Image (cartoon, rainbow, N blue to C red; front, side, top):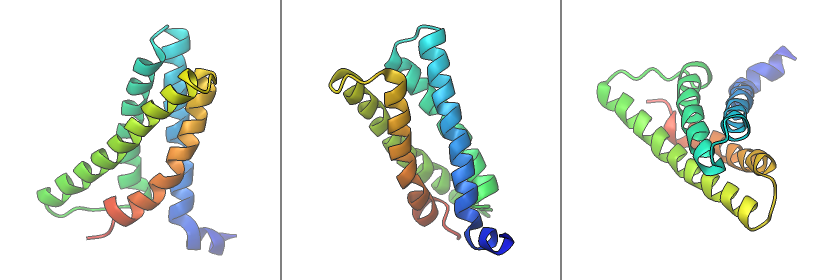
Length: 134
């Protein structure tokens, strides 16, 4: 079992932190939309932004363990992350809108479906583009 973890530790760590991030995102969305009564699109934008910040920190520190040696490298990494996740956030917002307005799914179910779809592609983008070793 330990050998299996050693072989796939980065993917396993990414998956576990991804579950935490998605849970944070969905919980924030639910709280803002259902408990505080915010419009589902505004609640989603806030939840996505907060989850994005959390995701950057945990991916950098605990999953990919990148240690940038120059300010330029740190800025590059952060900007890549924000631009890629910003694209994912736009897809998130558009996806939830389409599922709620046109497919007529509930807002929370739509949020869960979109999170699964987006999370499935983020690992490869993060590993190959954003957090690649210097």
